[in-house]
Image 1 (cartoon, rainbow, N blue to C red):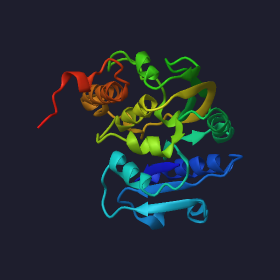
Image 2: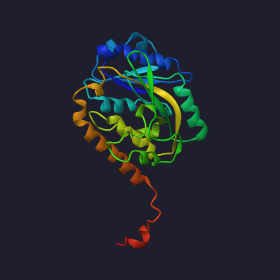
Image 3: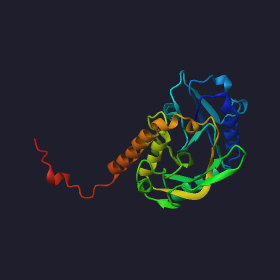
Length: 250
């Protein structure tokens, strides 16, 4: 588990709730918390006391994308997943996806997400990708244009760590997690039609800020192009006849 946080006052209770949802999981887990220029002493006591939680204190703020990628250096588990400091997991999220990964041998497993509203109610979000097994690159067929709804929830993905390191967070100030969807271009995976992640809706979230829409189009274009290019570059070239068409003699 990789989480980046600036330990802002209005989000500390949300981070504690995220940790509580991890504690309800029925399988072993570890979390790396990237402190994005934040004072480590502000970490909620429940996290500080948990030996499963390791912190990476960055000397200055670098932004969510960079902080998450630095934390990825510290991951030592076979599988990894991104998460935000203000969200939480459903109780069965880890066990269900982990069992799917181990039983099928695919590279990633995802699920649906729920919007978690301030009154505690939830609204299910069914992503455009249909449930079931998808071969490498197939998920991109459900994201035809950058402005379309993204094909999967990035924080619903549990994937092999080696694959995530090959397709990590994009170098963007927002929309960096769209780039993380490109891991689906590197290996087959399975989408389960059950909610595994709760996306908290609140006034302090980035997507609720007036400035969010200023860069959204450019972020989507970049992430969409990244995934499409990665898929194209990794597809087998069955029609290639390099040795017949190119003279490599001295």
